[in-house]
Length: 213
Image 1 (cartoon, rainbow, N blue to C red):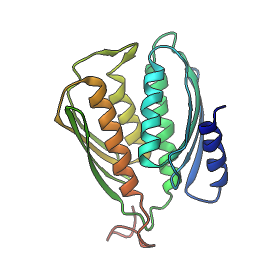
Image 2: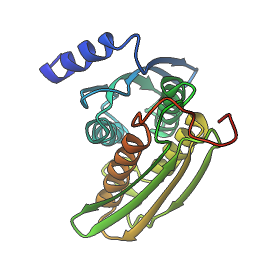
Image 3: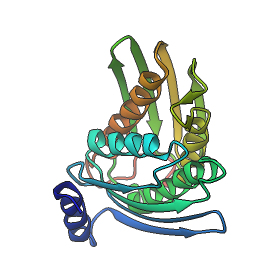
């Protein structure tokens, strides 16, 4: 385990009493262990299979953790001898469940977050509401079906699973397009920054006039 992975392990271990969650998801298709600390420094340790394009999605998860300053550990395997569909979708489920658990009753959080991320020729907008009502609005154009071995359609499957399980309202919109790798990566970075803003603790009130989220 490298120095960065050791840092992720230590930091998440320290956060047992804070905004953190651990999810274990075992199915006939995938086996996932995931730990998340919301009040972190962006330390990560992502261990995925080295086939079917899974390393590309591991890179995206590293970007999400780093730019959102979330501490994230993932150890996952799955039926990638078929393709990466089940693994990527289930990673969205597990991360969404971890977010929902770690946020708790949402008391004191900003609730809303917004960010626009440039990446060379690409410009991606993301807005998020931790409102307990899942909804995904995804407006992007992916010019390539494959990035290496990774099926780019799986990025949308991940985001849908994440929204449904985190119970968030998420809008992702491409303002300027281009390279498919840049589109997906800029979207993930914008999402992580928007989530970081939304999860900032501003007080101790529930951020709604309804009395419940």
